[in-house]
Picture 1 (tube, rainbow, N blue to C red):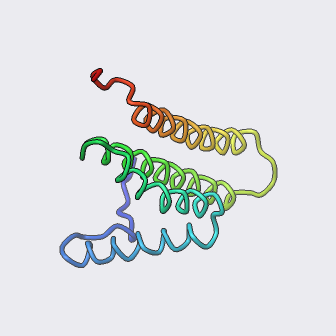
Picture 2: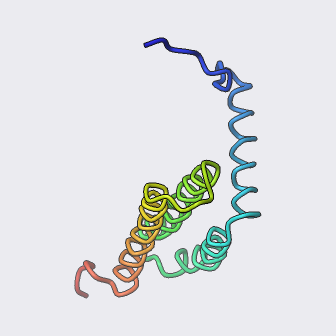
Length: 131
C-alpha cells in the first residue's frame, strides 16, 4: 500500500498553532450559523454556567457542572461534523448514513442525560456527607 502525504496536513511550529486556532474559530462560527441545536445548547450553557458557580459547594463541584456542559457542546459539534460529512456524500436516504446520523444523535442524547444526572446529584446533595 502506498502512503501519500496529505497536502492539508500542517508541518508544525507556531504557524500551526495560529492556523489551528483560526480553523477552530471557523468551526465555532459555522456551528453558530448553521446548527440550531448548538445555538440552543450554547444558550443553555450561558444560563447554566453562572448557576453552576452559584450552586456548586466546592470548586470541584463547580468545575464538574461546567465540564458536563462543555461535554454536551463537544459531542454536539462532533455530531454536526458527522452530519455535514454525511450530507456532502448524498442528501438521499441511505441506511448507513441514516444509521450514522442516528448514532451521532444518540451520543448527544447520552451526553445530555449524563449532564442531567450530574446536575441532579449536585443539586440534591446526593453523595454528600450527612450534616
